[in-house]
Image (cartoon, rainbow, N blue to C red; front, top):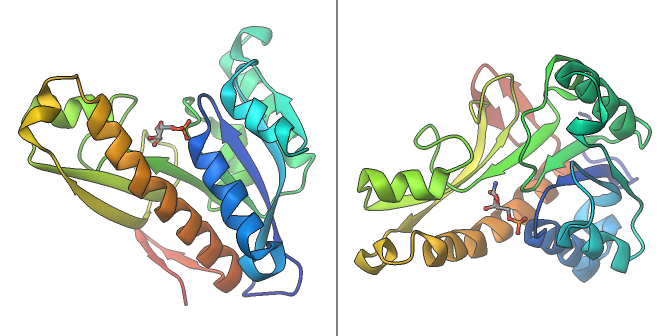
Length: 213
Ligand code: GRF
């Protein structure tokens, strides 16, 4: 991606659930304006309808689309449809913000190297859909969050930034809900900071190493 051009970079944000990471991006951009932030959200996509995440987008007048796996005969066709829906908005970056689906070949052929995901654990520890619960079950004393580029594995792509969060004894009592909330507080700030830096400064991915000038 070219380094800071005049026009804000175009973001498509993908969500599945409550969309608090999406909200943080909306608020972060709103706070300073898209020119100063370096990016604007041009659309929000989801793999299911009727979620709080989509409502957050609609509330502020963002364009939305839904691409559900069950509406396509095969997973590959869903993946192609998702890639086409995203491509229609000509994004510079795609942000998977609590999007609970693994994208496939077609999607990565078009958006590999510019799709960013946020994960609630310190990768490469505890990848997958249960990163918070798995860290607790393992007895880890420290976990955190990771913002990384998406590749063809499950949470295996090059790491952009991470933050650590301590696990407390009492976190074992509620199955990780309070811990996940503490992680999400840090995760949202990190995502807003990282996306802005990528958009404003550009970046290089060499092997596993990501550098932002
Ligand atoms: C985040 O912790 C994300 O890392 C995980 O699911 C959570 C999504 O939260 N995959 P939200 O929908 O942004 O509130």
